[in-house]
Length: 285
Image (cartoon, rainbow, N blue to C red; front, side, top):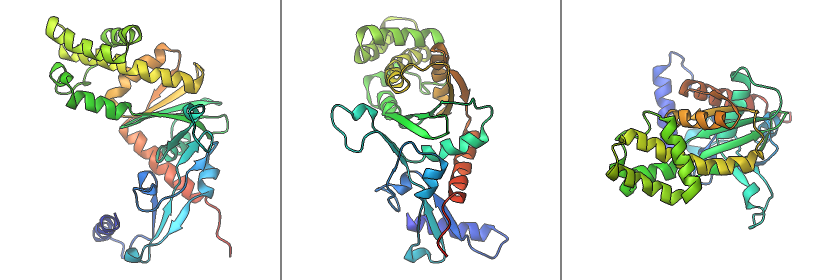
């Protein structure tokens, strides 16, 4: 990681007209985990801009002298120690908290009061914000990784189109949802195979059916997080090919949805990093 960062800094220096090298690096996400460059302990929810800024850690590296690194912490919600009774209320995130803080400044309009932020990626991140713009709770799932595994590594690979979610069929999505509720998740997935072998339905429609089954399970988690608090605004970011299905499902359940495209999501993340960095406490003289 250090070597990669050094090369990036050298590239920036070569491309810039300025003679000075970069003086600081602001980092957020998994680079602040035990798998990254420097581990920073999660901030306990409720956590907003000031709570995150107060726990930013500065560090320098021997191989990158003259550059100060500022690492933004993630957020942890729920009790400090997990057991089988409280595990449903515990969640962790790294990176999404920074994106959320930027969204509060960049995205308009945002209703006053509670807000739900959902980021679709390798993991689905459902993040609840309170009336003060603080992350108060969260719920993460393995849906992104699971979907990729189903598409690439199961028998359904031959039942789905090469680009599985390029189109969205609400009717087949709703049918997949209902079948999952009726016969269970794994059976609904297998029904995709049966339909492919015994019907004239297109593979694109079967992909929507499968996605309905997956989101049916996702909404069980969402209902537990929000306590069915419909009508609050949702900001939806992340994988664009999944956003139409999520928007359809959320609006069907009474939520108001604002989709963020890739450019907006990146801007939110960069703004969030900058604002958290700017709000960090001043060093003692």
